[in-house]
Image (cartoon, rainbow, N blue to C red; front, side, top):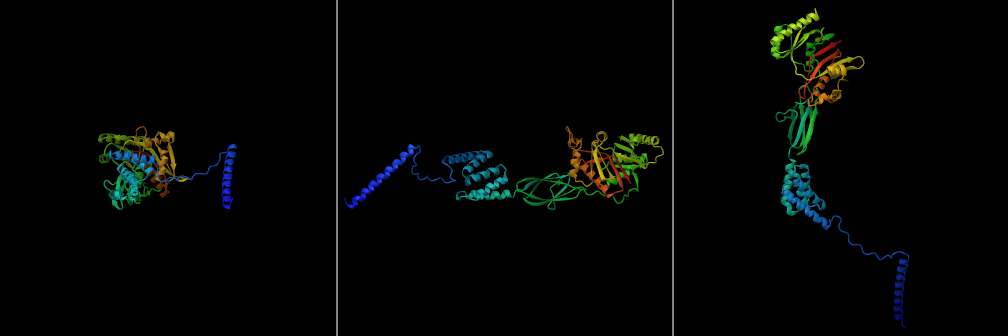
Length: 446
């Protein structure tokens, strides 16, 4: 055998041995309960991560087609849901444009702008005209005025926007339409500090601006001097306190029946007569108050009755005169008082009058200088506070007006240490927006 034959023989033998070893290895593996490890197959090419399956594409096409049908039928909410489903499967300019159109038709303008701008980010050539329309529509939406509800406590404040009066009636509460962008809203009301508020108006949006106006500091009239000491008669106390912004019924101090008749004719019937003297703080106990005088005849009878009562119950008392006042409307009665406490300094009492004050002691103590909102919260927290909010069909009451009286009483006590005590009882509060009126007033000067 030559050398070449030997080489080929070796190769045949080696191949046979290798095959035999491989078979043996497989047999041994199976015998041991282990499957042989075949040579791993080449991995299949993975699909692109963002490529939806064929079934998903079919679903997207169906959502898109259903969306078009609903859009043409005017079912914009239904169409919006379909186009969003389609766009979630595969985002396309067509779906984005339709989503924007649906949001626009539904009045969801900020969302419409968002989707229009997504569409405008990659408009294909075949949708160029639709792109121009979308760009134009975005400009129109962004120029839409914003709606602003402007309110104040108390209501009735005059509104100016950027130094220009708001459209008539121009008083709070009011609904305004303002161009998008920054503005300054100013509210002014007699007896209150003017308030200016910055306001950033968003296009096609609705927002609310509510301002709690602060009462101007109460001040005593310079032309009216306080007595050196003692009790101040009702008519003088009312003149003083009305100058500090506290409301009372219209009235006239008279000395004769003829003057009383003229005063009643001016004020309007019915009227009340009240005897006036610094030495008569509790007029009703002495018969010094006659109510419900509805005409000239009853006024004459009431005048005679009052004079007789005073002669009987307080003989020798020299009156300053008789106060003729217009009778006020009925309302919920409160009590407001203030005094200089030896330990606490100025303090204000407020609560429900009548039986609530005497039996239930439904009152609270307040320090001067509290903001209106805090005083209102304290009043609502009284035992009978539900009456102020409106109870069993009764209207909500003007608690803000009551809070302003409390603020002014506190300011007076701070400004005038010589005022030992102020007593307003009753204070009648009316429905929201109609204010509160003190029917009687006493002051003690130390």
